[in-house]
Image (cartoon, rainbow, N blue to C red):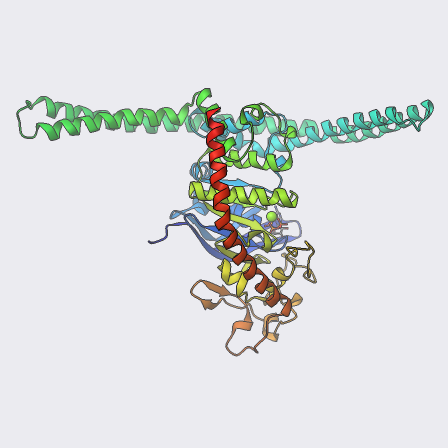
Length: 525
Ligand SMILES: Nc1ncnc2c1ncn2[C@@H]1O[C@H](COP(=O)(O)OP(=O)(O)OP(=O)(O)O)[C@@H](O)[C@H]1O
Ligand SMILES: [Mg+2]
């Protein structure tokens, strides 16, 4: 069966204007993504992973620019779409989850409401779009306000602790309390200075958003008016044709069927129209509860009315995933979604992403700096360094037959699965992207670098039909270099682990069947 291509990025370059000059964050990268596939983008901090994916989402920072290239989403170039059309795709087809679930949730709103609000059907669709339009300004304001609130909370906790401290005398308590209060007060005064300006900016953005949304709603209505007119006209024609025939006529059956079809089309479209604007609260609630259950939140009815701070980090990330799923995306971009979580929780979130990917047939782009995280999850891997893809291939190409010295370094720096210790950190630092190096950007840190690495950028060399790497070491005239032993050892281990997993998954089938039974029981109650 031919695989369906969802996304194709061609020769994408992105730069940022800064006071010091242009930061060349992404330099001529290309990759594609098929339906139901997980592509991992792996690389150190600053390699351009987030910037690439923010460009796909259309949320580059204001000083960023797509200099060259195209981002084809089902053959439509997102890099050239108008903001409005872009939103139609981004809002409903592509979902994104970030490293820090707190920053994507509104701390002052109950999680249930955040999920139902995110539903794009009906009026919520425009509500959501409306919020999106002034999201950045709102968050700047809200963040500052939240920081002030947290400072006050922190002050109260400390004052309380002082009052309970039995080692302090009454006078000491008084003095300490005064000190804590004064310190917080000064900080708050300092922070509050910026508050009016941020608030004004947010209100201004909100006002502009309102005007924009009104315009968009009017456009949808005009568009729909036209569709309805066509459908009604068609129905009238069919009706007339039918009225000219009597039941014994040979073409009566067909004409009747055409009339019924046309009638059904009209009534279906009424439903579609309604859903572009409206969804009942009850519908939204029920969908939210279903999605919360899908992402593994126990007692969703109870959790629905709680605030983000009442959730653990892992549970918060589940909420963020739920929100991303409400619009029914077909592509989910996960930007280091587990980095802020501890190891056991990390694994649960990875398993959850795998599960929803499988059940919903999603395509996933999974961004991480830790190759180990994606060993058990990616179908294909693209390794990024200094704004370029330096190697890409199937997961087994990258894990069992890595060719670029940077990929070797990344593999060597994966924390050991048993000891959780890093075997080898990569010496040196990535280049300054204000001045990208002439040759292979990794040359400076690469102990296998050849002279040409410092002079000329290596092209992609083909290793196999699925596997390419941009390193001069693959040139036919390059000296043969053995992979470091540490890497060959790792490969042996990865292979053994994969074998173990394969035999484990056989036993796991039994457990998941058990879980299913449990879920069925739960439904009954
Ligand atoms: N708004 C901006 N202005 C200037 N430079 C930026 C901006 N956003 C990103 N960059 C630069 O672009 C480069 C790539 O950043 P990016 O956030 O994509 O890295 P990353 O691979 O996601 O790293 P991390 O693992 O730290 O998230 C970095 O050099 C970064 O400093
Ligand atoms: Mg990033």
